[in-house]
Structure formats: structure tokens, C-alpha cells
Length: 249
Length: 315
Image (cartoon, rainbow over the protein chains, first blue to last red):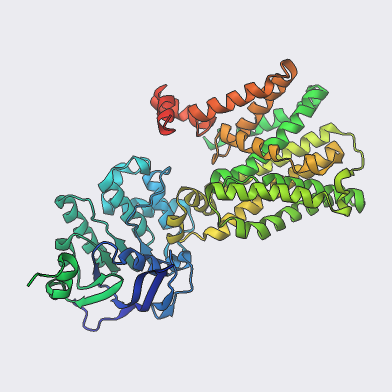
């Protein structure tokens, strides 16, 4: 981090989410600083995607508070949060299948932060720029459901970027990519941060998360079990145990 | 390009508007019916084709327009235009009140709920004294098929203009995003509830106007004919046959199917329904995106366009 004073852009306090009897998240608190890449890891079923859905407003918390730029947002619907500047990708990708790649991204530009562009022509221009940025321009006129895996991931990213978010939630954008593609996405995320966007990255690819994150926190069975510098956190015995199980003595 | 399109539209409109002067009485009557059903298909297009919510409640809006006009004219002696306003307001109120809870349902659940609505509304009207209960209402007689024809044509033209403007607007893009993936639309900043309710209200408004014109033309209405669920099925079939979510598809579908069923009913009345049903099954199998997509598809893929459609249907 080059900034001397970290300034929080987003704060979660005591977030709990219960689905009937199952507690997916219990009392999770964390702070995201402005311009920071915060990593989130955890074994399958740890509650990572649930946390993202609580932040984006797709789900509402059972307990707890969410603050964005000093304003309580946990009562707001997802479209209002999008207008404030929170963008997300979905782990299970949700393209607009029948629309062209360009139209998909243009939706992000038409709505999104500050309620987006008014004109569809300018929205398309912004969408073109996002496709350039993510390397999807040669596919602009194809239907979204014609794309293969890696390009779908890129599309998911381009759609979120077109919203011009201040806070971007990336839910496993590298899953299923080969090492070369992972490198490309890492470079992309670095470029996005360089534009001043605060990013929360959920990832299973450890190498990537170690390189990307300024800070890292770990969820296990819905609870935060560790937080700090990536190297420290990844060597924390509790984290190793969560991933590999208890060592036999 | 743009000038050419405007020119074509003006010529087609002028030709259609001239029908009462050079067509026979039965052609004009067929025309009124076809134009009004095309308006209904176009109204359905907004909520079903653009927003992707397959409404079976549009016949309710039609029925409310019918009864709004009839009650205003027969019970209160108001002029026709006031009746249309009353019917339109009733339909919009109904769309706002019932749309908010019902539009939370998705896919088949939404369809079933709206279907239930149609049945319930018919029963309510059949028990209202002011609506003439089961006996229905008789409107003041007005002979003037040419006028009704021009009214229906004007309504269809305005509705289509509205659909065109919507399809070019931010609102239209939001509706399409809702149809394609509602969750993604919401996190990208589309106010999904507002957009859906607005689409349903607009759809209801034009359906009600069509109902009002039909009521004054036919001069006698009863709950069975005003809240007829098969009318809604017709709208859906016509819009889907022509091309849902397109500006002109539903009109083409409505005109073509109205003409086919008219000819069939005249020639071979007993098996007309059977043949009609067969056409629809084949259409859905071979061209699920409607007639209007066939043009693009065949130019792009040739005959394999149809094979691809069958594959996509997993037949």
C-alpha cells in the first residue's frame, strides 16, 4: 500500500445469515479500505458467496450492519446499491444469454453507478471501451451464450466494469482458467485497482490471491478465522487446518 | 434509410386507412377484429415479449376496459371517450394493485397466478349490480363500422409507436435485461419491480382501450365474453408466432393468424380448430422465436436454421 492513511470505504459489522436452521455466516465483521485489494478465501461452503450476496443486496442479512462510504445500506435494494457504486460478478455466471456481448456490457453502462448513462449510444461506447479493456472486442457481436468458459468470465468482468463501480466484488473470476488466462486476469485486476477501484476478491487459486491481495481474510464454517497480510494468513495453523484438516500427532 | 422506412410506414398506414372506402363491409368487420387483436398481441408483447413475464391476465385488462366503457356509457350516460378513460384507469389501477404482489412470482408461477386472476375477475363482475350481473350490459347503438375501423387502426399504430420508442429507450433495455436474467439486472442497477409494474400497467392500458372500442362496436357485453381466457391465449399465440420482443412481430402474427382462422372457419368449419392447432405446434417447434426471426435465421444459416431450432428444443 502506498497510501499512508488507509481510509475505509466499506464496513460490515456482525453479519449473520441463517437459512432456516443453517447458519451460513455468523457475526462476520470486516473493513475494506479505499483502493485496496482485499482477498477472501475459505473452503467450499464457508459462506463466501453468501457474504458477497449480502453486500450486493441479492440476499438480506439476518443480523448485522453494512456501511458504504459512511452510509448505512443494509436496507437498500440491490439496484440502489448498484447506483451507489457496488458492482459484482457471479460465481455461477449470469450473462444475458440472448443478447450480444456488446449489449450485455451496455446494460452495465446504462444502469450502474450514478444510475448510468442516459443515452444508449454513449452506453455502447462505454461498453466498447470495457470490451477493449477485457480483450473481448473481437466477440462484441456474438450472442453471450455462444461464448466459451474463459470468455464468459471476461464478459462477467466487463459487465461489472461497465457499471464503473467504486467497490467491485469478484466472486471466483479465475475458477476454471488455465495458468496463462489466470495471469491475464491478474493483470486486469491490477489495472482496475490502478484506476482507483476498491476490490474484494474471492478466489480458490492461492497463487493468484497471494499476489493480488494487500490483505486477506479467511472464512470457515461461516466464521472469520484469520485476517492479515497474505503470507502470515496462509501460514496460520488454523487456516492450514481448515483447508487440510488437523495434523495427526 | 430512415426516410425510406418512414415512407413505407406512411404508405402502409394510408393503404390500411383506406380499406373502408374500397373494401367490402365484411372485410371492414374482419379488419376491426384483426386490428383490435393485433393491439392486444402488441400490448402483451410489452410484458410477455420484452419483460419476459408470460401474462395470462391481459384478458382481465381487456375485460376491465370493456366494462369500464360499458358502465360509463350505459349506466351513467357518459360519452364514449369518457368511457375509454374510465376503462383505461381501471386497468392501470388493477395492474398497479395486483402487479406488485404477482410480479414477484417468476415463470410458470406468474402465468398461473395471472390465469387465476382472470377467472376471479369474471366472477366478481358477474355479481356486481352496476355491471348488470350475469345479464351483461347493452350500450347505446352506434352504426359506423368505418369509424370503429379507423379508431382500431389508430390505436394499433399508437401502440406500435410506443413499443418502438420503448425498444429504443433505457426503459426497454432494462425490460430486456429483466427477461434475460433478472438477478443480474438487479445487481447491475435495474429497478426491477418498478420496471415490471410499469410494463404491466402500459400493457394493461392499451388492452383496456382495445376492450372499450370493441364494447362500443359490438354494443352488447357479458362477463363470459369480456373475461374470456381464450382471448388471452390468442394474444400469446399471435405474439409468439410473429416474434415476441420485436416491434413488428406481434402485428404480423396477429394479421396472419386472424386471416388463416377466418378462411378456415369459412371453408372447413369443423376441422378449422384442429388445423389451427397444428399450425401453432409446427410454428413453435420450427421457429420458436417467431416469423420475424426466420428471415434473419435463414439468411444466416439456410435451412439448418430449422434444424438448430429443433436441437435447441431438445426434440
